[in-house]
Length: 392
Image (cartoon, rainbow, N blue to C red; front, side):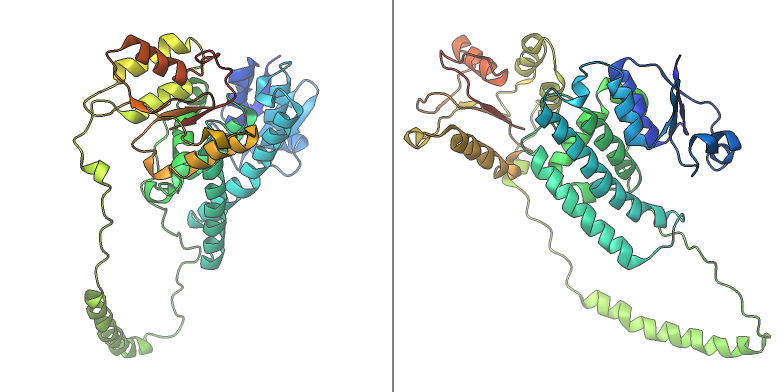
């Protein structure tokens, strides 16, 4: 028997279960002709969820409501599901990011968006608080994603599904490019996730909001019940208002125009045939046949006229006597390279040491070394690979 999901076909909370079903192979059918505000107020629906909220999953053992609980149920229908983590600590981290996504991301996006489209009272101070809280949450998420492709581990988990669905409402309705550009790793993560086939099948094509929705006034101005007598007196007031408004325009003209931000010198270089973001997406999304797909794709894309390859080694390896300290150094270095992510890609391996030198791409041995570094080949040059970090 197929599981039946009661929700509209554009409900981002329903998408959580539907994407999860794509990964688990569970048959979940979205009920047809669902009309919000009508279907969810029927006696039959209220028997499944007394407060009438969506989505609700109808199962042979009874209904389930709350979207995260539904997604967990669908994920658990497959034994040893990697969506739920492969260890106790991974499972805990998945739950951590699910809670973070719901309480810090989704809640603040809704507090900003819902009043603007007229479904709640608009209060500027509440909106300011929601935006500030959302920025703080996105900054924390951005820091985590600076050195991680996924929220937990090296593949999609339930945390990524729920986070992406919650971000989808924001990116498509209220989070403009000028807002999200402060969080480049969140941007990279979101666009990578929504273009994974199992996500894209359910979400379709996502387009980023071009502007923040204007506030829809909940109350229309009521006309005065007074006779038309004061109307004549109101005219001079309008004129006075116009006169008082004039100096504001003049004052605005006297304000100094904002200075344009200086361009990064790298932006002034001629464009390269290699689109770096395309390579980064290929690297992040290739899960099988890595050598045949990603490595081959790298060398096919590589443009020696626009980019150069370098082998570099840490100069003070005699200091690297404690493994976790060394790994922290690598992670810290990558975080401090944020401004370079738009222009570079790199792999850092914790192994032996040799002087740095530029890669000769006509030397097959050097090309093979680059390929092995990209795919985390182990052993690397006879050494055990302790760790590998990717800068992208």
